[in-house]
Length: 202
Length: 194
Image (cartoon, rainbow over all chains, first blue to last red; front, side, top):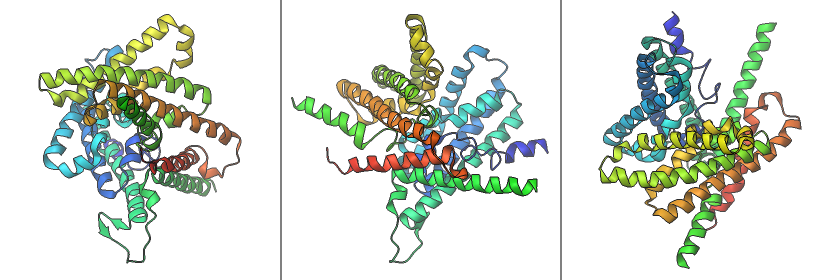
């Protein structure tokens, strides 16, 4: 039961993007389409799981003073492995995500989970935490990517959704759209949670 | 003369048309995190610009070494190490020589390590195949573009403090939408052909 909670908390209650506001750079930059969101989300998940497991295994050997540096090296190693794997097996995605794959190293989610969770918990819990947080990140990216791709391009996963008459709001797949869509989604989430709270108090 | 003109254009297009924060989405965390006051925004961006420029110069030579030993796949690991060490050194140097500045910047300094704009500039320099002079100009301009965006944004945010904002929009959402509007203004520059 306790382990299940580690897995599911990342999806909604502690969603890294919508609740903790971590990993904003990658979120804003790659949510232009659903497929980019999935690619980035799963790459980050892979890194998160690997780094959480390794850090949880070595947490007792690292002197407290150099722990952040040690974490960053572990994370950088995992990212390099994922980068090479993507290059070999999914070159198209690797190309469209470009510089943001190596930049997973400095994604605050990963260092954040290493410091806040993996350095204090056992291997199984840390792995589950990594899976949950990673999938939560992916879910958020897919939601943002869907909104931006459907409204900004009239497609979903590259499939044309509307007839000839549809005028896509191109601004949504341009940089300003990223900020505005995320801001709006966060506002809607705030609205829903505050409604829920009011309902609970009655 | 031609080189000078080219460098000026590179610098202008980095600051305006390809603004690091608003167009390339690098360095969003500090952009949203330390932009509540103009003063801290200026301090942060000065520190970032400095680290960015020095880090790019060092990684320029590190990349040469990596190529020499044909271990380019170690790029990410090597670059992040350089940046982490550099930030530590800068922190200690400022603490030693200018305690006043250290107190003003204090908490923001270690954060620069995980500022993706710094690693981003270092990686982009290599990707674009810039030579030494271009690397220097490009990374300094990248720092300036960060400064421009964060200082403009913090100015707007100070005003937001006193504004009457609908409850669900308070805090992060309105900040993001504001950033979106500023980004839209910067989109205008992309029409200019440098």
